[in-house]
Image (cartoon, rainbow, N blue to C red; front, side, top):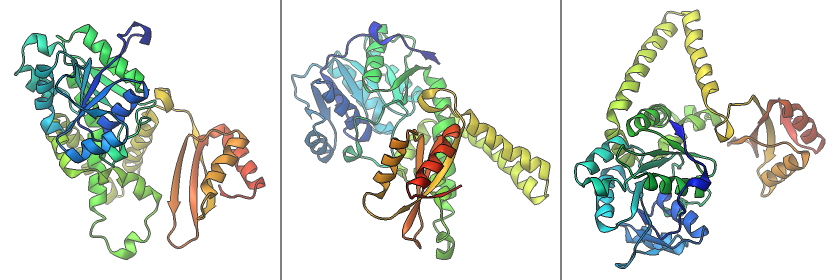
Length: 365
């Protein structure tokens, strides 16, 4: 993986930009381009999605005379190669896609178009999204501060690569140039495998007794949140990246066998070693803006379940001068308050606790 050139050296994104697929990602990109003042044309097989995205101000329906500078293909994996080929044949534009798997679509496209057309195609993948889908979930801020892989093939035109990187920067993301196959191995590890782990844990809840589920807290919600994503879409993603995912699942299966043995045999040292590897993995995740992770601490505050209370808490934290790195809210069904976890830099925690208590908040250490 390599960093890209400076923004000043990249081609200017002047438009028009054509977005094929007016779902969450496509509409979010279109909203960014409209915010930049660019002409954006939209295509989608769903008339409802097209009308909704147009109504949100994301662009206008495509017309026969359009001559886009850049086409962004944002369709499900099973339709990706067809849509890329169609865009290359229909226009003389640079074409990128935002699919979560890169090697298989590239091979499919390369088998169907000539070298001149293929040189205009540069795959990419924003590491941003949501368990929600569709244009109504879109936001021009979706990509702010997020990494965005750009995966040129050896025959890609440098101008085309640069134009895609210009789009990434205009969207507020950080371009990361990678080979397509390496990208697929990376997302299998940091996206596809975690999703499957969440699915397996969430699946154990579907038939759980109600009295068990009544004990649910924020931990189980955090672990299972992404399991709410569209199963049909994820089937396509996993089929397209099966090789890399299966390699990692084999490693997890070996770890699970070792874990079961350690628990069954009361092998304390082995169990501690396995648990400690989890600590090491969480510490390896990059911190904010991709930099090294900084030590943080959680401050827990009871927040009455009334309108405006959460805003008041955030306002007080801002006046105190402590930056909130992350926030989690745990709603207890049996209490008229929620427990809000404010994640702050470790050195700021005691100051925040004391200041919030002086303002009447109930805190928990």
